[in-house]
Image 1 (cartoon, rainbow over the protein chains, first blue to last red):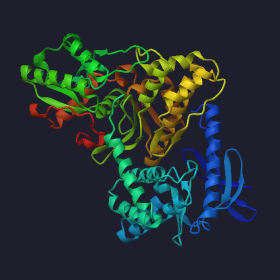
Image 2: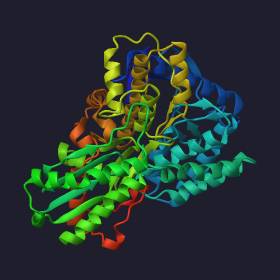
Image 3: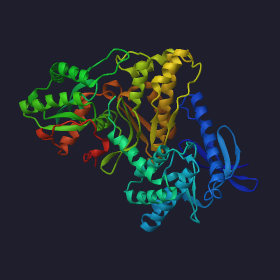
Image 4: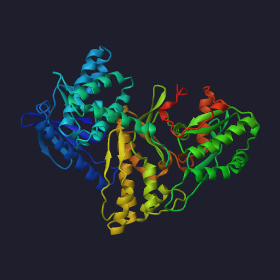
Length: 218
Length: 335
């Protein structure tokens, strides 16, 4: 299996390879030398495990996402081989290229990402690391969430609200005001979540206020 | 040329510093130290500041070689911090401003840490990890503000370490965190690894408030020694801080990282951060206890920048506030 290194992120290297005729990726979590080896090993193992479990969960529980989620082909302590998401670019790349052209398309993207997040949460899963880099958008418009290393199983509205809060914070790095788009995402998310939707949005307000209202003293 | 005198008293340190064009002329400090097992309470801390402030002003002036006439501006910490200590210092500054007839600049404590870090290290546009007793934030400058990209959503890292030190009854002299660092230097080997349930998220980190009861139980059953626990807690927390900082750097493509705040003088944290930076081809900027820990010069430095870009605080506005977000201040001195 010849593998080609295509990306080196903060904690993993992504290789493209051909797996008995299928286009596949290998996601290898490398050793972080700044961490104590024992801690590093434990964290890496738990993240690989979390990712595998999350993908399996969405494949079996979400009607919307089951087809588009990659199939896992092999797993070890520090890497996963899975089918490749082809002809896709990140949510962030899409936002940055579309924002110069039309707001409509960006609004539509945020709306659809709201649906995808609701699917994740309705499956009893918390992503743990929602950012604009962690959604792949295929040419046909299908949205695939990725990077489940920090995911966990929970249906508590607190965890769901924090998940949304993490995404809201990550939008800050785009460098322009996205509050209008995020509001569209939240509205769609709330609708898709059904009954608990409103309580999650209320909880999100509470989470946002925590940083601001907390006493900043030891 | 500006000569600024800065007053800091937002927590248990009272610091007064004089800065002349980025040069620290004097920076004395007095720390209120409580017995092992006890934290510092606002009232007692304020009393400490009130008792030593006059002496410290004299000391600062003497060390700097400046006369009162030469000072251009008085700068003080408006917040965030503990109400009573902040108030005690603000009253003194307000009085001095009227006695000496000097303008006043009210300074945000967090921004002072960042500006002092930049001055001392020469960092230009870094990702800042601000980690202290009351704050844990990942900050970067963007469009006129220091933006908070990540922060703990319950307690600050320094507070977590302080509480832990209290459970172990470690000395508060010079600081609980320092003694945690020293304690885990004694131990040769980790026998076992307690599992601290801490979630590391991309932009927020979350410490569960269990430290007190769980630690006490571990010690009682003899499952872990204090040395094991100090080592494990420090390694786990710092790994999370470095990881989250790395994500912020990766997301913003930054090649500089600056650590400020009291916990920032921990050598293990600096070592881990420097390894991470090295592997990314980035540079770590860090300072030692003179500037990491709260001090007066940092208030003078931020005050100088604000003074030069026209921020003045009228006497009636020289109030304090316990909550004062880093991203509330217009940073118009960065071009």
